[in-house]
Image (cartoon, rainbow over all chains, first blue to last red; front, side, top):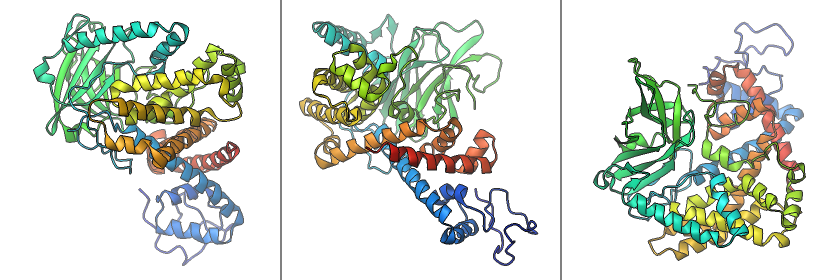
Length: 289
Length: 215
């Protein structure tokens, strides 16, 4: 927040190089006559109060150096805001969620949220990341027939998953997890040893959401420790504990959609069973949905 | 809150400190080559030339640099189960078109133009209900404008990546994460005046970089 404005700085304008004024302004506030370059970005961002805004304006009227600086800073500001705007818009899943999903409402985006119309379970188990996706391209180039084999393997994997069994692990019952899939994301390894991974799926249940966490190859926690599932808002580091991850490595957690949408990542931590309810700061897996 | 793991993409290590907005930061900055990669492929012109000669490692390098951006773009329009296919087709087409690429031109607009066409194909081929707004955002002038803006966003990210680390960090928090300067000062534990100076100097330099990259 901007501090309250001084009562009336124009009443006793201190000379540029004179003694400090009776009421010392905060060190970041421009003195009349001083260049205002550092105040231009917050000016354009709407972060300055009335007094400071008018001081900057006064100075800009006459200072060619600061007028030139304003041009650069306006260009930089405009470019960054345009970039952030399209990035936030693209980050919204337009086509991924099914029709019954609420319109995505990322606060940073001003673009109308595109409504998705796919229905049914669209949770495609896949890894995110170009390194993994890159392999088929090279295979295609080097050995064109490999594509067919890869496709066959993918179908086989899909059939396995649809059957509810993957790598011998029992998934939560179809009934429990049925419903339109709002988001799906791969669990990426943080502190967990390779090849740990898995995926999270968010299923819509009317206004509520069911978070389904399926880990794979996650080693059993050390004796006395356990894994805990959290929602995380990476931009603010806000966290919400969802519950203990069952020893099977798979768990489902219900939550109101209005709360869920305040978060964008699922974090799995390794917790000591010492009564401390806070996050241990040891994240083993994380997914951004 | 700091997190325990050094692998944590949110941790502010020596690299990647600009933003915790992961989808943006990871997708929109062309990735630098790994240390072992040939210096000859460092600049885009050499990369396209090497691609034209049929060097597979040039294709690998293109993929490493640009696949995340292409994926982010495609994922916005195409349902999840079709994204990989489209991304694959884009880079296959890059490979097949390698002899016709102009080394003097940027690769990103070409990649996104192809991605746009393949995404449209993919949506039209689908037998299930297709998102009409996704198609509308891909075709015609609007589709071209969006693709152009994505390329511009990537250029801005890349230009930002050439600034000193402290300026990148302050600007990233300010514009991509939309923190106020006071909040940034608190988060970085530096005086507000320092944040102001970093952002102002960084923006001026960014404007220079962007003008310089305008060819």
